[in-house]
Length: 167
View (cartoon, helix red, strand yellow):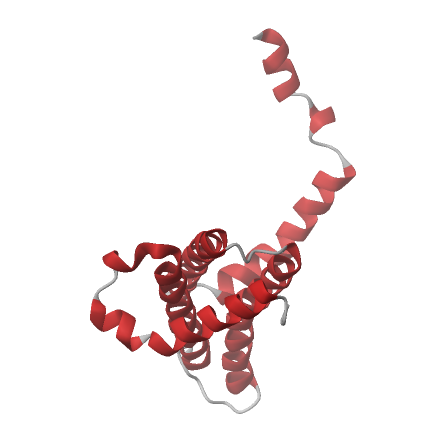
């Protein structure tokens, strides 16, 4: 136990160049994120993030069921997800530009519009993935009919990937 406490309080483990770099980045990024995602924006972004996580879970379950998962598709999906997480920040910047350049003070219209639009799009994808994963009995029929075009598109894309005609 004494060795654990000694290593915990040792500055040698904290004063590494990578830790100092992370601390420096945090001092720059932290206040920007606080400003960007304050006043209700945090919760909208957290909802968006939660839907993305659910989409990944259902997507992996669907890919496992129909044996279409490939690392190439997963890597491009990871990059696509990073871009989608970045886009609300661009919406926040659009709101700031409208205030500073055009003098139009809006309470986050661009941020909320973009974040909610992406949330809805990702929710459709998540629902279609859940359907493809075999979980359709837990999805109301009205919802599956509402996202039927997304289900059809994902099923066709999975079949093409399985056949090797599309990657």
